Length: 446
Image: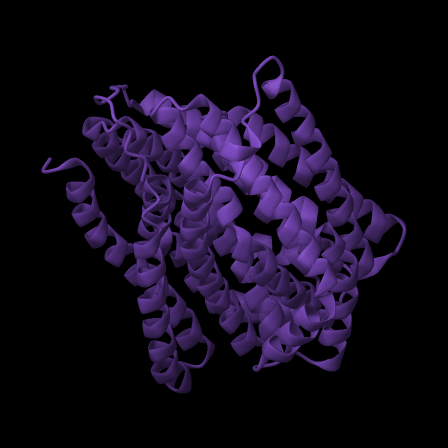
């Protein structure tokens, strides 16, 4: 946590300021699961459950890889917001450059290690021979987007830390818009199948990195860049790595939980795997819908910690939670009543449609079970209380696996879904409890 040697720097937090951050980021985040829906729908038109399953398994492997490095987005946001709150302008720019260095290095390492990453992922997640073949094709093309994808995490995190949510929306819209258009062109127009979906992602990520760097270059114009000594300052770099390590463990644990969910679906056959994959897209849409307010919390909470101003912190927590719960209820209603139409849109396979309809209720409930966890994530990321995020995630995972061991034998796929809901709920409640303690430690009694 940034502790500048100066008095508190007051600033106002209003519904308008929260919405000014949350609405652009909600739209930006929604474009990501919409991309997943389009990719699934495009492949689903080919009428093969195995191809849909292959995209799902391949997506989980990349989530394990890319989302493990999601700290390049979230950690950068928290540290940038705190540097902004404390008035350290050169440190604001140094945070971005450190993040980009780590992003490019990690992306190149993933390309170099692509064979073991792919094969270990397939071995863990399983699926039929047809699913595995589709997964290999998808992975082999998409892995080359790694340096660009991770650099885009850093760019988005830095912009959000500055409160430039509109620019973040522009970049995410560009990224996913290009991806969607190329996916439809390559698959439906040129008949490139799974490879076409992966290639569209590669081109979109690279194009967005170039555009983002141009925007950053213009933002740096006329300003003295941070020195190499500042960028590689041992204390600051160590703090970044410490925060990022904890967020990485938290992210890896979260993706393991969803990978476990996918693997347990695959063990029940291609039809259940495809049905769960489609319903999981509902959860992702709901999650990204809520993430806009979590992102608002990141920026305002981080700025409040940097400014050492408790009223802004308290109001940011209160407003983002109120808005988050309201939107979670709305999302649950939309998923329940619109679910049958969405399922029919995403696949032409009648067996998959029938199975997905059976488990639709769980997909509709996920926003309500997950909203507190999403909002608490934003608060903890902004405050860089990363160790607590890591620890509560590990506790929640242990409970998830324990409840699965009891519920799945008794209730089958219903038990799998209920275990996931409990995992989300416990994570939110545990972070909420710890957060009150950490706020007292950071600011003193309210």
